[in-house]
Image (cartoon, rainbow, N blue to C red; front, side, top):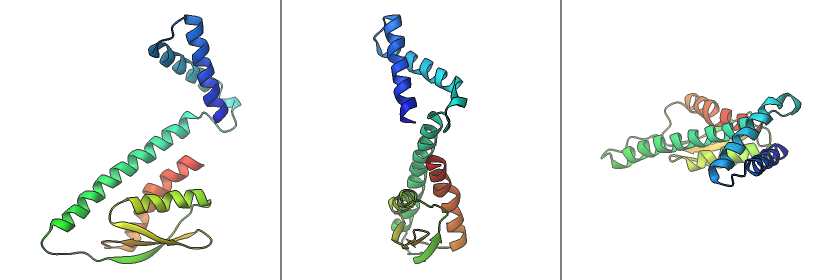
Length: 158
C-alpha cells in the first residue's frame, strides 16, 4: 500500500513537470491521473488499490462521528430529564476480531462513545467487558456493536 501511495505522488510530480504547471490544481490533476493509472493496473497489485482502504477508513470515521452525536444526544436527554430512567449494567461482548490492534480500536471506539465504557479485555482478546449507561437488551446492544464498529474495523484491517 505504501508503494502505491509513493507511486501515485511520483506520477503527480511527473505530471506537473511535463505540463510545467506547479500549482495546486496541477498537483491535484496529476494525483487523479496517477490514481487512474494505478487503478488500471490494480490486477497486478496483490492487495488491491489503496484507495479502498482509504475509503474504508473514511467510512469508519463517519460512522464514529454519527454514533458519537447520536449517543451524545441520548446522554444529554437522560441528564436533562427530571426523572432518572436508566438501567446501567455491565455485559460481556465476544468479538470476532483477532489482532490486538483491531480489539484496541474497538475498545477505544466504545469508550469514546458517550454512555459506554470498555472496562476490561480478556487475556485472549476475544471478550470485552463493557459498562453501558442504559441497557434495554444486551443482545440488541451486542448486535449493534457487531454491525457497526466491528464490521467497519474489519473492512479497514482486512
